[in-house]
Length: 450
Ligand code: S3P
Image (tube, rainbow, N blue to C red; front, side, top):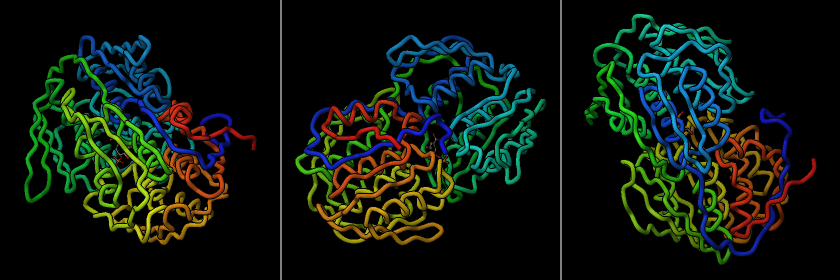
């Protein structure tokens, strides 16, 4: 089964040291938001370093369907001529967001307070994911939604013709839900307030401020209270998209487990709401150094050097760190397999509703590769075998999930025997240059016939 065309089976073989510079693509979260916010201002937004993965390209297509002019100038340079807050036109056709939960949920928010109807769909993975977490708060603005059983896509939303502002406490730690409510609040009169009990990635808040919205954040006993003044005139921006720390995680983790490796990953976004993996790896004993710390486009950025780390130790990852590394648990579980002792990961229920059930997908593959994994509804534990002792020799399923495919590709670089991945095609959603970039560093990932 593949939602991305023909399956691409891959084999990742044990390899020699990884060396060189890994120029990973632009940040996926910031890329989606650049296109959507660009579409919500009148005038031209210029974007440099946009991630040209399938997820973001689907969002670009969607913005065109709502009336924005989105132009690819080549080499990661894009412009968006937007229609302004409240200016979305009704799309003539169904909006297909492919594999992207971020795309569909943010776009739902952006159209929810305009008097237009839109039908959304996606691939088999996205059509299995819960949308009620977004349509429930959007209903408070006056938005109607009709979808499949369990709040699943395909789903039609009718935007509120006379939206009212909303005060909403997000019940799960989700930047997508928070962002959908804030984007809907843009076209509601008065103040929309979103409260999150646990801080999640704050790109939407930073970028809304950058585009000229009046938005305040206050830390209170209730949590993080975000107040947005509705109906602003957003002003077009020039955006330099930092490279994605979630993509950097793959060459970084590979360098830690492949003997002799030394890899530099320049220009990585190190927003504290995203950087939890690197803290965790350092606590495990990883040789990581941050060089040239600076700020670019309102986001902290650094060059990250990762070297082979032969003495990694399992740790208990603090649950309160989960939101800042939620997309990195699959590859962390791979590193944990090569560490000595148990890595304990708790407070991670959200992993079960990502592009796949990521605990289940990783646990199944890791066990087939000879690693012990124990799990519960919101926790899992990997018992590491230590460097050089992980058998591998397994065929694993990527279950339409790019990060599962890439995590196992990293694993195969340091197991005793290769790892075969049934379908590497989902990698194109977030990291289309993954195979070439890893090959340039010295990895041996080959496409194989099924
Ligand atoms: C994202 C938020 C996270 C993350 C996803 C990107 C975003 O999802 O897993 O890859 O850009 O807002 P949740 O909001 O569901 O936690």
